[in-house]
Image (tube, rainbow, N blue to C red; front, side, top):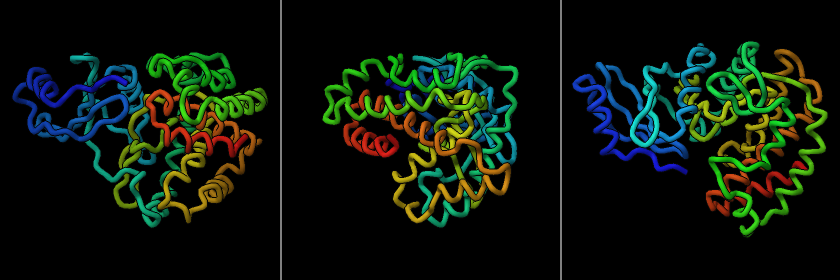
Length: 306
């Protein structure tokens, strides 16, 4: 992972870039690929993020044009080059991370969360092309959705050496191989659905105020593919959040679909396939970062879908 811009350098950049228009810069937090600071620009509360991967910030700018009441995405004010990489300034949205809600809070916000996922599904994508993690120009790198999923076993620039790290980890490569074989057997029968998929709807990327969503953040992992992938994301990661153990998220999803467009076709196969992919992808990242406890958890979780 790349080292995000430290506070002193961020202060220097903002002061030199905006001058007297900027004030009160403070650290908000650091994610896996960027570091965020709050400040005031012309009196408005904003956030600046610094990171090495400018395409992630450019995708946030693209997605901001689709913001709506059901899908609140912060307005991007400026995006460009910065020391050690790139920066993006956006309006500041306030709220509690979805991840930090207790059972009562999650039950209250679930209807809005499911409506938000519908809003992502309904975004028009006819002017774009391809499948998988798309570029800011709207181009996915793969010719088909199965190809995009099966590429989880490939080498990737952001996590170099993950395969060797997996092989030498306490978990080993066995669970990955078994899950990948199952994914390969299922992928060929998947529908050729093509929608925008957020691809990371937890990890503090959704903010909540009261019973409503206040922001959907970080579109760097957004894909072109089957919209059910975001539903599978919730299903896969739900057991990680012990506070939500009494909420049957699958039943909530089924009830929502029955009340809107009906139960999707080939639902079980699609959800199983995407949960396999989510687990495989998590294993590659855990191996790369050396998070062996997480790797063991994800291996066990993924194998439940083999």
